[in-house]
Length: 96
Image (cartoon, rainbow, N blue to C red):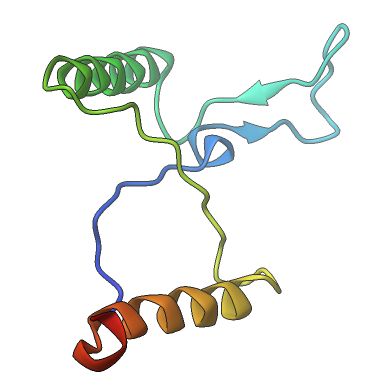
């Protein structure tokens, strides 16, 4: 099975990073926005909402997905399971 780039995935922690111990917060965790500004993050979320609205208008469902990063131990076994299922579905002898 050949993997395809079909989705854009952004990890929340990549939008902002936890503050170092020399930063103090009054309750809760302190995050520093360094990848994007607060305005850019708001724009990004609004664009995502707009895309979701468009999908729903076209009769499609909202995307619910499972993301498994390559460095996780579950990645290779999950990929192997998906590959086996897809390859079997594509095989004209077993698919029919």
